[in-house]
Image (tube, rainbow, N blue to C red; front, side, top):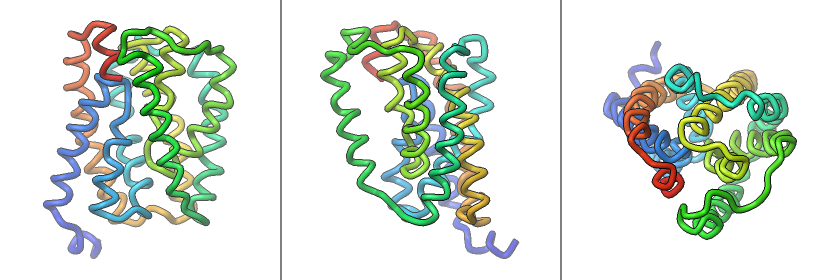
Length: 233
């Protein structure tokens, strides 16, 4: 328990409130809580430690989000996505322990910026055709990149919107998928020695705050129209 003397309680409280704020926004915008945390944690704890802490915090928050949105989960999309995503996460955890690829974040950012124009700022309900089988390779790709960067939730949003999944159904389905993806990610991080006691503590603080943010976000989401939701996404 010596590591506790080295941990800043101010930092832990800050991580708790960071989790609450970002996951409140994440719920009403269909994801992105983890991605919002990336630049802040890069600054606070360093880029090499950011991904494990963010993914641990997100994983801890998932049961709360799943419980809040259970009845809205689209199980067809879930089963197409999860098996390949879990395999990809384990491979990426090993790869993460060997090499760091930070430029992936730039590619992800460019794709996300393009969605402003794909959906005409939320006015369009879809922008390209998507089939269920597309979620098999998509799960593998997202799990690998997300394990490296710490956040890939928003990249899935255009695909879910284009298959007709919105609002509570989108949030619920992503939460269920992300829980099993996170299970592989955290197992991989732990197995390859990427989670120190201090990082576990940071991740738990972040996750507890994010769990509270899920509740606040659900209250706000219930009042939103589909058009407003797409704009937030």
